[in-house]
Figure 1 (cartoon, one colour):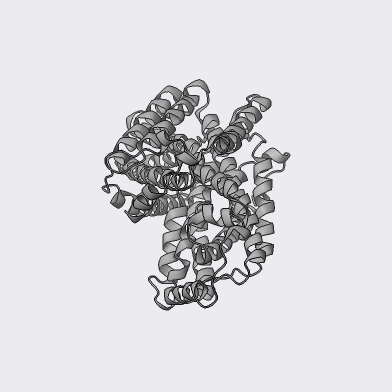
Figure 2: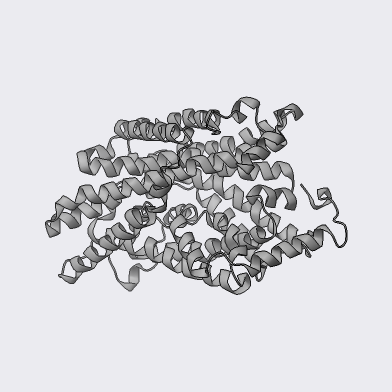
Length: 492
């Protein structure tokens, strides 16, 4: 939907009403800036990516700071302005700033990236469970594939029942699966070094920057863009702040600091005890815990830590399972983008057919773990594809934000990002650079064919991020629209 498609408002009526609503929202805050900062931290921070950066030792600080400055900050501030002025999430932002088809592409990519996200997340779950049963299973592709499929389909069954029983699990994820294990990992690491043990990775000034061996030496930075993604979801709360213009940036800076601490310190702790050439991208967290627990003779804690990490990851999966797919469903019912079969709801009002179709594709992708000998290679490839598809959302969002500021400068906004055009340009360039670098294999690819890697990543991006959504747009029919049903779902 372009600006020309938006109906003109009658002077003194709709415009005044929307401004009054915006004023009331600002005048009646529902949360403090500190609460928003903690919410953002809980939705972004995770220990899952720590092994990926632990490979670089002290250089992980640099590799986390760069995307935080050029991607995390622009994303947070730009999405805050969009959320405070236009409801409906990324679809409506892009639809109004660019066009409805591109809005569909954005919301599709939000949904589609989860197809690759689930296998990589559940591979982490599989390796964590393996350390309780048999650590050797962490590198077994068949075992990993089986765990992925069992966990995913169990999640689909739970979600299709319309239960809210997982809400508590998801909300406690930050505490039981991130803060407690992360703090314990860092404390054990500091005590380990304090007792005179040498770090497995050099911790001197010569290793602040990653060793330059061509583009491949910076490839792992791509995964950090995905680690920081999701900031746009929390921007919807900007209008609940008492003074958005001052409090939202303060909230985002605090959240960014907390997220960096949660990402950097555990990664460093892992690098202190597990050599880079022995580090598994999926099992690295448990490798470090196992090494520390054996050293301090507290191996009995291993199952407890594993349970916490698994519970947090599964809670996060269940949260993501329903969210993006429901957003895609509602937009498709309003505009007729998906065929009726995929729009069908079960008796609990859940988009079961869409989840099942997604599950079939996810199961096929999970077989990569059984077919690719190195589990870390499969994990990395799927993580890169996930990032590539999600970056399309941000490319569209930044362009839409610039156009909305120019086309609708007087549209009521609860928050106006300072230097929005500069922020968008920085975010655009960073996202585009990350997408290009994502096609360069990292050392974790295990010496496989470079062209095979490019074909898998490029094919995943092309098929999932472009061909499929534009095929749906091409085949869409007016009779596929079910706006009344969509309205009922929203009301529910």
